[in-house]
Every structure is written in structure tokens, then in C-alpha cells.
Amino acid sequence: MVASTASGEREGWSSRSAFILAAVGAAVGLGNVWRFPTLAGENGGGAFVLFYVACVFLLGLPLVISEIFLGRTGQDDAVGSIRKVAEKSGVSKRWSAFGIMGVIAAFLIVSFYSVVAGWVLYYAGVMGADFISAVLAGDPFRGALMGESQDAIQGRMGDLFANPVLLLSMHLAFMGVTLFIVARGIGSGIEAAATILMPMFFVLLIAITIYGAFVGDMGDALAFLFTPDWSKLTPQVMNTALGQALFSLSLGVAGLITYGSYIKGSSGLGPTSITIAFADTGVALLSGLMIFPIVFAVGLDPAAGPTLVFQTLPFAFQTMPAGALIGFLFFVLILVAAVTSSISLLEVPTAWGIGEMGWSRRKSSLVFGGGAFLIGIACLLGYNLWSDVRLLSFWPLFAELDILDTIDGFTGKVMLPLGAFFTAIFVGWKADRKLVEQMTGISGFWLAVWRFSIAWLCPLAVGTILITGLFPGILGD
Ligand code: PFF
Image 1 (cartoon, rainbow, N blue to C red):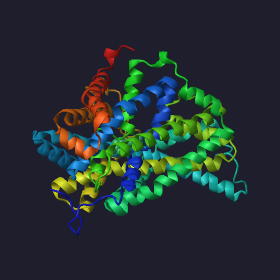
Image 2 (cartoon, rainbow, N blue to C red):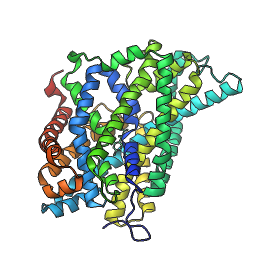
Image 3 (cartoon, rainbow, N blue to C red):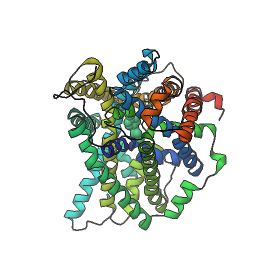
Image 4 (cartoon, helix red, strand yellow):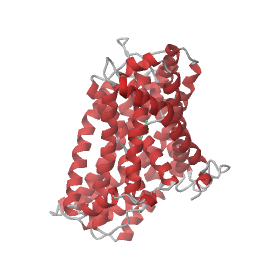
């Protein structure tokens, strides 16, 4: 069944550039601004970064084209779209099962994504209040959190995690905004949000990067991010880079199938997909160039891990000119990126509810937004009241992880690569070749290159991530 508006027409983007903006908004998120710098820092910089970029263009880009092709051809929710392409290609409709897995994965990811975005919201609030007090004190260009020791600043994160009510309020606020936008639909919800938030994001990103170049240590940051030490490129590091490329491009969870299904009219998928891949990678690299000059200028550790952004940077902002203002803007920037991604995640199950269950958009977004909110509560309780809970204690890989890390690990290491693997096999081997050529608008040499990647490179590489991700022991270490 195809969902339709009151006028009987299925919803759609108003233009090609609206689609690109929304898809870039989906791709650019916590994965770029928080996870990419964290991973680049932890994995030694240059070699990881260069290998990551290779993964994006050799494997990620062909998958982006494939997902958009499925949605655009099917013009239905993720499961319905795959089913329609299967029908048109004369193969079993059971292939749509991997769409169901994508819908479940997106639903699970948005539940913990909102919790992490809640931390960002908390820090935006802390830094915002600090900036206001700087303005009131007549010193708007002072550093952030003056008078707070490094220990006190770092202790804020522990205090936040120990406070379930605070975590819950932040999660509720973020999920509420996500749900509100998705419930409004494609045009006046998702497209409108992307049209306002993405330009804002880019202005902030460029402004803070320029600031970092002036007050920070850009030379060290450039050397760290782009001078490869190939001895650091272990199989584990390659595996992490490949997984991050999938996550960052929003692949494997039917996000781009769903967004692609709202494309009306024709446009070549090659240039559109290249724009998305370039924008996403550019933002990841720029985020590194925004964060590391500041980290190095203050002599902090680039390999701090997931707390880099939350504990290391606020301390750095203390010593920098206008640190209170820039620190506040920095967390607003991450928040903006997180919103445009979380709406794309919630849209995947919402579109499924509309298309497969025949629900109204309002009902479907409420069911899945509400459900994800509840799972998110379990995630945040995993930091305090339920800190002993181990969801997958029987599975050595996940046995030690708290609730949020278990859901993150299971979706990232199992569901997402599986989704990407089946997408590659289905589009590379099963989908009708004429249909593919006609609907992607790609032909000749580039069609051959794309086909080779999607039929051979992607299944092999993604299959390898899956196996090495699940059985890390086989890589040695
Ligand atoms: N690409 C997003 C990020 O980098 O934060 C995460 C994401 C969004 C994954 C949407 C999947 C998705 F469908």
C-alpha cells in the first residue's frame, strides 16, 4: 500500500536540491562531528582517515546510489520499495525482508541516538548559561566556565550520567523535537527543518573552524589528520573505518531508501549521490579540523575517546578567547546536526507504519517515536540504576557492555553491515539491469565501474566487516 496525503498523492520533496539537503542532513550527524574525530583520535589519525575516505568512495558511494535507486523506483516505504523492485525484476518478494531489518535497525538506533543527543543538549544548556552570565558580567568574550577546575569540568559528565532525571529530561526534549518534525510530514516537517538547519550548520562549522585556525594549532591538526603512519592501519582499524563509513553515510538501515522514495521526477542519481558523499566526508574532515587545533593548542590528548568532545573540549574553551561563546556555538552545531539525522532515522519506521500498516503519519510517528523513547529510557538507566544489566551477556563480544553500548554495538556491528550486504547483493545481482540503468541514469563506463563495486567489492568488503566485527579474534591483534 502506498501512503498518500489527503489529496491522494504520496508525499514528496519539492525539488532535487530539497532532497539533497535532506539527505545530507541525514548523513551529517553525531557520526561526523562526534564519532569521526573520536575514532580518528583513537586510531592514530592519518592512516585511519585516508583509509576511511577510500571506503566512502569505493564502497559507500555505490551503496548510496543503490539505496536511492531502490526508494526512487519503489516509491513506497523501505519494505514496499524493495518488494516493488523485486516484482519488476521477476525475483522473490521475500527479498524485502532485509528492508524489515533496516526498519528495526533505524528504530533501535534512534532510541540511543536521542540519548546521546540529550548529552549534547545538556552541554549546550550549560555553555549557553555560562555565555549569558559572561554577557551579564560585561565580559562576553571571556573563556568558558571560568573558575572551574579541569577536574570539575570533567566531573560534569559523571554527574550527568549519575542523574537519571536530568538524562531523561534531555532525552525527552530531543525525542520530542524529532517526533514533532516527523509528524509534520515530508514538506512542512523534514524538508522545512533541513532547509533551515543545514545552512545554519554549515555557517557554524566554517566559522568555528576559522576560529580554531586562528587561536589553535592548525599545523599539528593537519599533520595529525593527514600524515599517514601506515603501521597503524591494522585490520581492526580498517574494520572500524569501514563500519564508520557505513554509519556516517546512513547506509544499511534503509534511511536512503526511504528518503529516495520521496523523489519525484527524474534526475541522475550519480551526481546526486556524489554530492551527498562529498558533503558528508567534507563535514567529517572539517570537524576534525575544527576540533583538533583546539585540542592541540591546549596540549590535550587527541585519543581521549568518546569523552573528547564532552570533557576535553569544554576545558580547552576555558583557556581560549571568546571560549564561552564559541563553546556554546559548538554544542549548538552538534545539536543541529543530530536533529537532521534523528528525523531521518525516525522517518524509516514511520514510513513503514504508513505504507505497510495503513496508519496515519501522526499515529505511526507517535508509535515509533514513543517506542524509541521508551527504549532510550532503558539506555540512560544503564548508566545509573541499571548499570549491572547486560542485555547480551551470553555473547562474548557484547557481554561486558551497558545497555546503550549493546544496542549501538549490535546495530553497528551486525544489523548495519547485514543491511548493506543484502542491498549490494540484491541490487548487484537480482535487480533487473535495464531498470537499474534507466532509474539511476548511469550508463557506459561508470555503470560498469559501479556494477563491479556493488556486485563484487561491496559484498566482499562488507561481508569481511561483518565477520571480523563479530569474531574479532580472527584478526589477531
Ligand atoms: N549518518 C548519521 C550520522 O553520521 O550521525 C547516523 C544515521 C542517520 C545513520 C540516519 C543511519 C540513518 F538512517
